[in-house]
Image (cartoon, rainbow, N blue to C red; front, side, top):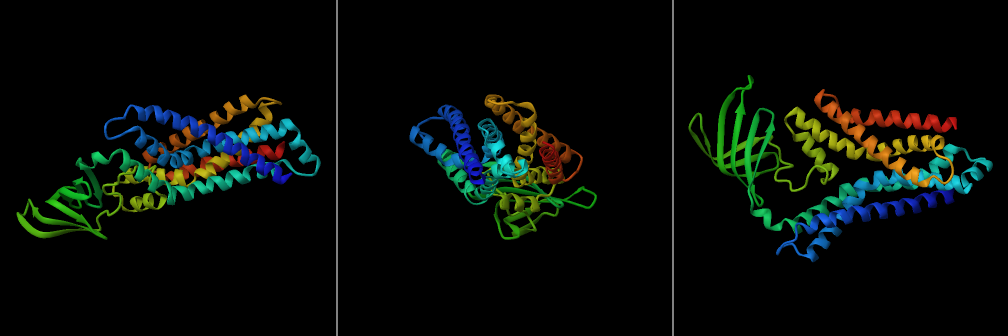
Length: 333
């Protein structure tokens, strides 16, 4: 019975993922049709969709996991296999665990994909679609400790940099600017720099302990690897910005646990809410539970950012509470 539950859960998970991913890619296809031009042809469009498909699959997997778990549980209940397992001495918790096993494996494989595969594919997709836009300068602001920097990137070359050094009282102490700079291992080297206040010139001026990751990054935080997001987190200056990055890091890292938590609660509620042959209702219920819990995590995350609370707690504590409630309700059935 354990193997039957395992393979049934895996089969339905793949089926749900295929349906949801197909719908998602279809919507992206319609969106990409609007961007077709002489440089972005049909062939490049389909190649672009293929490159982002793994990343899209990893993003929708938590939703698919919730839906597939509820459907699997419903199918096994409707067919009588769940009752048969209980007659053979299997507890309800044991049956739920067998349904969760393939989901847990697949969810943790998504973490490996986020770290090692999807960032490379996303970069290749962006280079394919936005290759002609690389010549455009992008001006950025960044802060580290008592230094605020405004700079631009043209392709991979840093230019037009201005460093504003603040004193202990947060008042401006000096300004250093240069037409070009290089990002080194632990500093920025400003070439032919000029200090405005003291009117000094430097052949090379070094901004020590400057941020060296996340500079001219073409990927957003959601597309970056976890290790890259963590590096940016450790080098970000402003507290509010650090909290935002921390939220994205912990949300992605704890996503498998959050998905398992909402599955446990959803399965326990489905025992109470649905009778036999109510799979359409289960499908809608699973979707609402997944979207609703994701919205709750975003709300708690924003509250944590505003109130200077650790975003990790804003994600972990609700997930833990939901998991405990779900486990408790399953034991009572």
